[in-house]
Length: 387
Image (cartoon, rainbow, N blue to C red; front, side):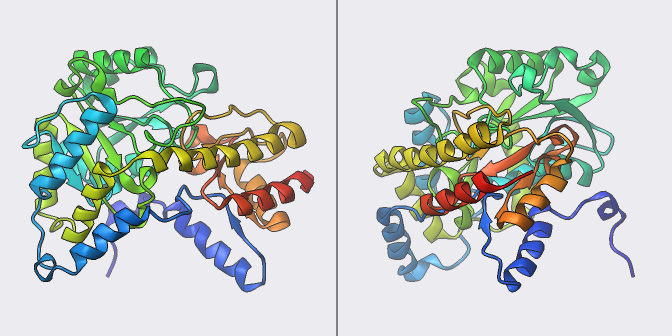
């Protein structure tokens, strides 16, 4: 017996490997502070939990929930896009609830790419973009995110023959892992590029509501005509502290959404009704708590930024959004070597930039997704760390 050949080129997900290493260290008595994965450290507000509990208690809410979300859930998602971004969507065919945006991102490859097709993928980038492309037998063309370009891909450098073959492009701003943000002028250029080359533009925006210093991230669908060629993935994981609940959405181009819905209806059976009801509460309820939460993230960002700049003396851009800092690795180390050294000598776990693609080498990704007290403890340890 053997596994499918496609798995031969598929690496084990980086955080699964890291978790095994951390379990071994914890068994040895090491106090680990996880600044590696981008998971919010707190629960959602009580009003969301109350909505969940109320819906769970309904006897009729435990069967199959339908493939496409309830009309009320889709309406709540449409209303969120209108109030937050000024983007108007059709509730019938321009929004699709997802079991977390990750599954939608992975299934988009099944819906849109055939063997031999080309996907334009940011490097470094969220590993699922690359993984899903390979899993369907399509080809990845890397779009390097270079610091000199503000960690934006240089669309003008994509060769004409690649642009003509491409079927899909992945963008993600605010960006994971770099923390970069994109100006509207870049989004306009990306929409124009994809329209001219008949490419589906997939914009992944789970960090749009995790912003600092007064910055407010836009939606790529705010660009006039973007819905002609673009969809945007979003998630309540980061915005509403609901990472484990697995609920998100894709909005925009109706042809792409119809294709993805067809795939999903053959793979999953929809989102638990109680989670749908809690999501409606999350999107329609009081939103002021998000700003307060972000201010706490900002405090943590500033603690770590201070260590990186004033104690380590490494180069790092202070992010305006996302959960991450993206500092340079000191000379003499690979990113994996340096994160291993930090982990073994301080108990602070970070992610090597190489986990996000070849152009991530030379960087570290540091998350603010721990309590402020734990981040302060990590900062103290890192301040004393010698390399």
